[in-house]
Length: 400
Image 1 (cartoon, one colour):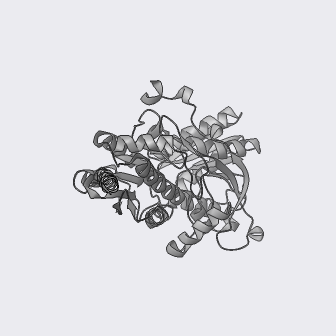
Image 2 (cartoon, one colour; image 1 turned 180 degrees about the vertical axis):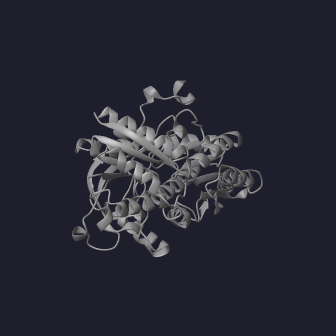
Image 3 (tube, helix red, strand yellow; image 1 turned 45 degrees about the horizontal axis):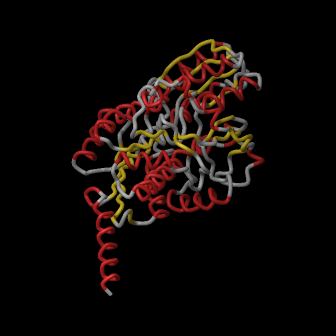
């Protein structure tokens, strides 16, 4: 009897010890996103829903303590985003942040999170600086980066005969990096960039930019922006008759929601690179059905990334037996990433997630079987093709 009592007491103490490892008695995750701007459809409320579905899959508690999800709109302003994050870190005791669909906001947050030892998992931001010169032991570049999507899409277009390019890019960190990465890929494959122009974020009128693209004589107009800017640029390119004059469009970052907005007639045949697709297999279809019921749309790859990052973070908290950021970050790197869209992905020393991606092509209207059936998967792209080579890394963690 004494042995049983002693064993029970020791078990109770062990449980209390585990419970004590959760700071502030709650595991709190912040979704920092765009609720009403240019990337609201591919992030926004859908990202919050994705985080909630990860919580549903994992369970309501971690190490016996409740899990809470909070959300805020950074409005695509670095000062607004960092102000929210300071409030979250200093007052609200948020343990981890996800999404962040703006590279300028993400880079500002990366520095703040490093100082405060808070984990951030970037699904929406694309700049390679997050896992290169501005890498952090607490920062994880989760879903995609400009290097990966540029290599997947631009190389396919050049090999198909699109050898001369004009670049139309958004004028902030993401657009600058995407333009550079795409230019490097075009030139490496024997093509040439004959001109470029940059436009403000959330731009409504692309007429002057498209006129410059027309006059360049380039075979391909590379669209290096995202969200509604991509939709507006492609829509107005159609109105200007670029295709009729022999110019093709290459959307370097293109989402399911963009196709939905523009329609298959306007986007058919467009190549794109994506980290996920709702109709890949049974697990992705089952999860996406849950998402559709709550969000009224199929998930973008950013939504899928938010779900996967939150789920992996919670698994790492459980594995580490604590929400201590150093121990959780170590567990995240040690564990393979597995979820409805990801199979055995890993995390490099620079924080970059090594995942399979997919070269896709937008279907012809006649080939689509119904709403959201928009992509044909052309081929799987291995991580070695889309990840920045570590031999060229400027990340301190890689340099040693």
